[in-house]
Image 1 (cartoon, rainbow, N blue to C red):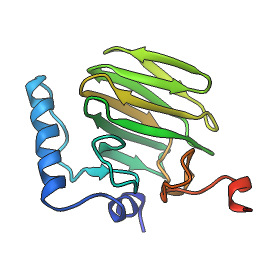
Image 2 (image 1 turned 120 degrees about the horizontal axis):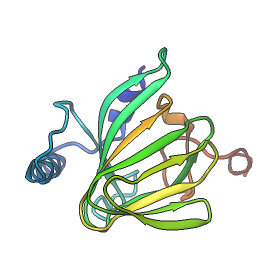
Image 3 (image 1 turned 90 degrees about the vertical axis):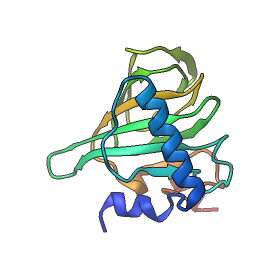
Amino acid sequence: MDELAKGYEFSLTGPAADRTVAECRACVRGWGLALPEVRPLVLDFGLGDFRRIGLVEFWIANETAAGYCGKYLFVFDGQQCPLHHHETKTETFFVVKGRVHMQCGSSETDLEPGAVLRVAPGRQHGFSGLGPALLLELSTPCVIDDNVFADPRIPIGRRTKAESRR
């Protein structure tokens, strides 16, 4: 199964998800921008509190053989993408619109439009919207099981070796 299909397995669906996507697209249109016409992932990370912990992902490409991935990530005001790291994935984030509070390793910073942040494999990171925000993620290919979340309640991805021995 491809990685996007795996993502759809834990993406929210139904009328609430449809309203969320419509609200997201309307916000981005209001900025004078466009998003790809793809079915997005509406993620609450299995915690059931989307407006607090979640995001909307629009996958542009996940070219495993070619070695690259591109996604738009949208967060609403105050919404968090939870702390996590990747065992092998390298990511570069570009803030397209809005502002985000980013935690990366032991440092925290607010990023404005035009800011770029590279995150190496193994480096814990997460961010939250300071108002609605749109980021472009450019990375090595996305592999769902390469996600390791700090919150053990999140059922997506995998646990670290130490956690899996418990």
